[in-house]
Length: 609
Image 1 (tube, one colour):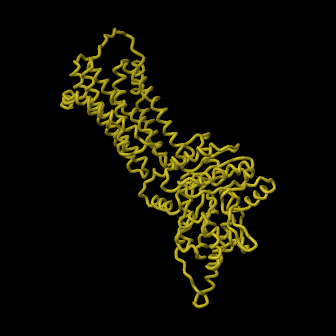
Image 2 (cartoon, helix red, strand yellow):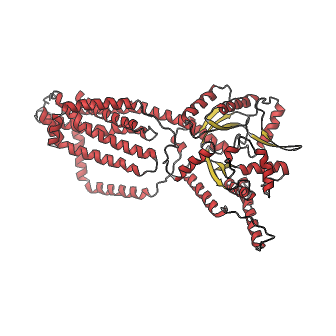
Image 3 (cartoon, rainbow, N blue to C red):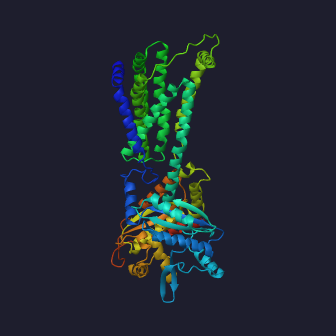
């Protein structure tokens, strides 16, 4: 390290100039640093589940739902309905939105004298104002399971406008435009904003707020600590310069590589200031000690680098390695946090070991004041002396306590409850927390569940399997409002033939399917070839432990109970065991009854199977 110290002093002018140029360049790059609050971007994009999720979004009009909820005593009043309609029509005009549904723009299936009509629940150009008419519509709406819990709460106090954003839409920009418009509408309803686009707005504000608030606080605490420790301008400024430069380099490098600031990496500046300041403190402190010993300025710098250079390097290296351990994480934001924090720590070491000594070489040596000899030790000396005597006197007890704490810590590791509840990360009075709590309690949650079904969706057997899966979903706690093309077929069959089920023949399905042709809801449920469809539901919890359990249950049910291969057979022309077939049919019917009973809260004591 002695030769390295000589090189630093030899090239001190280029080192200072080069450091300043790099810092200015990186500072300009920070101006281009973007914020990413899109939680979908935090996931590894090459993960099979993420790939499938994105494919579904491409095929069915997008994966991002923006939900605006309006709460009042009774939403079936002209003012609220007109406000819902105004918001709905504005969202429908936005090119970035693929589909909008609400009370004033939702599919309605009604029986007519000459057949069936698939229309709208309301005439958007003529929202009713008569009390009796509104009361009639209210009763009709709340009697329909396809509306309750989807676009209106069970008690009729909350109406919701749901917008699906296209896959290529800028969710943050579109979300801001939507929110600004909603807030510009007049009304006395309490507003809630849920869904990824609105969450992104809130998270962006949180990230900005964290950086703006925490950086000055950390810098102030560092300045106070340095002032108390060194009692000199040199002792405050030089370590402070080290962390400011290294932090600027770290954030500037993120911007150069196109890495955005996230809810994880917004803590990088704070960490770099806290960790990186130690290297400058060690170097300045050692330099001051050598000066007090009587060394001249240049020799003191050489001795300082020689003696603390390696320890500081090892401290920085081990710290960086610790942060690089985050590379094993599956989450992109955690990997980025680990990489750039590690790089920032090494930047802090590099600046401390080169730039600071170069600066010190141009600064006059500090004047060492001769201290009067005093027989009275300082308060710190008395404290440390007492602590050392206690340690030596009670070393056995201290070792036993230490080993006991380590043992308890290791044992407790196996009892750590590994779960994530995003809502708990926010204050109870925060906008995002209130919206998510309301969605869970009144509308079954805001997290979508999507199950992709491949097959001939006009084949009754395929539709029946979809209904079977939906009935199972309804029986699960925290899963709400499953819907698909199969539900619409059942709804139409109920209105037309007083039977809420899938018709037995392909012709029967085709007759009902005819009424849906051209309806704007179809692209959200099936593809243009009618061979892929979605079963959509809502997850009523953001707790990952519960979500993982539900996911496992659904996957197990699909693998064990849903027929992936459906064969058409003619019982009159083939030799089959009708007893076994009927037993299978009875078991299937029995299971559906049990799922419905679970959903509606009934208990069946004598099972049919």
